[in-house]
Image 1 (tube, helix red, strand yellow):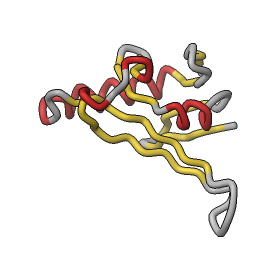
Image 2 (tube, rainbow, N blue to C red):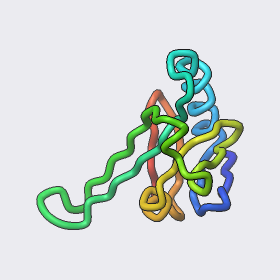
Image 3 (spheres, rainbow, N blue to C red):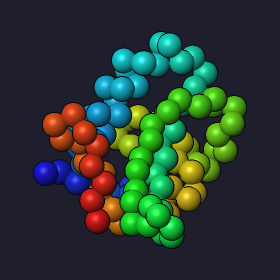
Image 4 (cartoon, rainbow, N blue to C red):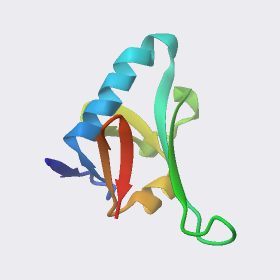
Length: 103
């Protein structure tokens, strides 16, 4: 498994980068002026403590601060500061049609 460490601290595999690229290529035509946004939430308290989930959506390029726009592989993505903190030193991998976030 080939892994890359992004300068923002996120670790990802080639399979994850390929997943983002294929999603961007398949959907970009329907989202002009938009950018993929990667979000990750890890719940620390309450009923859902210990649970985490990720989300990938399209957002307007105009709402993305330049310092929060990154490239994973060849795909430009918005990664919010809180998401970068939550994913720091975690591995993003894509296998069997699913994104996995590993410690």
